[in-house]
Image 1 (cartoon, rainbow, N blue to C red):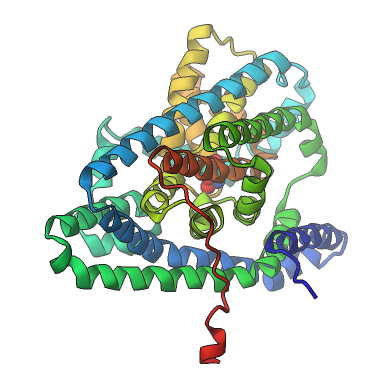
Image 2: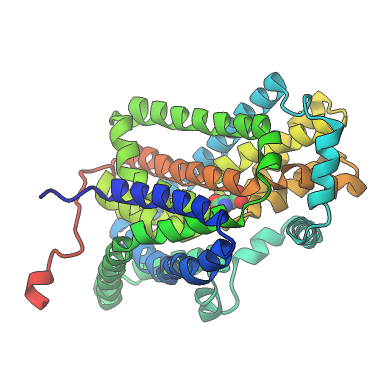
Length: 441
Ligand code: ASP
């Protein structure tokens, strides 16, 4: 019997997880049961993905750079990647702003709902922790991000998942230095990293075998942890605008794939779908990164020389979904709380949401922290920030799940575009987990 394709298996796991989660909310001990006995399997899965992220970036980027054999090619890829990332993010914010200004989801929201949301969430630890994180972020100088990119201890950087840019910096430095000592002398190190890269990609295959069960656990937990359904309904129009914007981004990526890379966009979306489904289930582009890399390289055919740089950098700095959401959320809050936004204010949102999405960590809920900075940039009164966040908090998790899909899809699209532009978009070469199993079993 033909085995069900991975994305279908994951989708079935997700649907069953949602249904199971809903069922459990009707049982008195249901929530506790899901949190204590089901959720740990989801958490273990996310931990396994994070476990291999740094070794994968290290091995694959060293391999990518040393395969290039030419530093100017790397500079070429680097500059194109950053330029295209900035363009796609600006397009995303613009789509968000146009939609929120036309559809005005904040205008219809009643005083009563605002009061209820404020009472429920303004002093909730979820909101206050975001405000605190944002104020820590604000205290840094303008070039701090450059300073933060350079590690002072390579092993320190390699041992902390939140220091992905430092790992990328160190690895690029290592790869370029390997090129500079010549092929013969760098050969042993190159062989080591090539082999490490193959091993880690195999680990991705093995971890993905458990994905259908893991997403069941993750989604069941999301459902039992979500807030009051009435409040979710009150925010339906706002959430609808964000989701519509995110959907338009998928249309935009599909057009780019079809016109520039001349590939079928449905094929692209199908091949990338396991990564998208995981992005949705984990709300973290960083946790999804190993799967995104595996899908883009093996299933789409982007050469490692491109994907090993474009994807890890994208996971940390390119967040089209997050920036679109920040634009919509900022204007929605302004509309709901009668804060007058000028055209200049809207343009400021474009700029700060661009910077905020670069600065957002690739973890659940990070976009909301940086939203505070976007709000402050347009002069939103600081004593009302907690109320502003309280307004959107109830739907933040589901929207986070959706925007993370776009963050990951955007990275994959740009990887294809950059690969095509430098002649590195080849044929897919899929390797199953059990390719060599017969030899060792
Ligand atoms: N969860 C998002 C990501 O990991 C970031 C965010 O928008 O909160 O890409």
